Image (cartoon, rainbow over all chains, first blue to last red; front, side):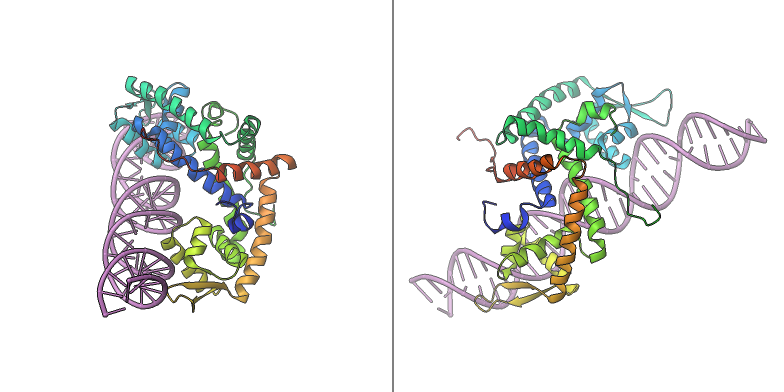
Length: 154
Length: 154
DNA sequence: CCTGATGGTCAGCAGTGCTGACGATCAGCT
DNA sequence: AGCTGATCGTCAGCACTGCTGACCATCAGG
């Protein structure tokens, strides 16, 4: 990882780069959030839950890009820690609205600060411009339409 | 993912962006490589194996950033497909040197072309400049030193 | 020959994310 | 009202990945 043959063979491969950069960020994130007793995915749940009016689990799952069955375990964990509260929706009793508890809001505030600081340090090796551009570039790639399996009939 | 609340809450989070961009690339990669009967990780193994003189499994694992126990299964699969060959090293009979078979070299050539085309399409939404910069930026982040757990004694 | 270290292998475990099924609920229709 | 199909949350089960720990064969040094 220090300029040897790896660079020649792999360092220009997008897959390798994205995977390992993501891995490294995940490590930093886990370290930064450990004091708050949550991990990055759980923090993301807290964030989407405060972003608007109370969401159902399915809505939250959609915003996070995870499966609804995954969201069950996520909310389970957060509820167990006393950070969120499930409540049966009165408009539609199939749904659970999930809301932050006061403890959850405290946790969110602190954890978000820690995450921001972590990201700042993670991006420190870059020029400020390049850091901004990285975010924009990734956003562009994500918002591009999915290309489905190539089909001759297409 | 089309400009709704997700953008506000998550779209600027590095973790979310990296994870989902990586996921999307992985899908494209799987699709592009399917005709060759290998996946992205296996292609990466083939690449490092041709990059130099025959490598031992441990050396290959090091270059790929995977565990040696992971490499066992990887080489198993490739050997099963007839793309690589294990051979006991004569210098050090604890080691396996792993080499591409002719079929492996054919596969590598075709799969690399497919991967390059796939990456080109993946990066198509970006200006050429931004695509280049993305690679450089990711390389910079990866080559930055790991920051170990913060320690008061440090 | 011992001893300690190294490389490959395997079993087992943990984390993640999926599918498929189920019960409860809703909406539309009759 | 009652029936039907869809929706939401839940759970069990599976697959994939990547790790740890143990084992054996082998090497290097005494």
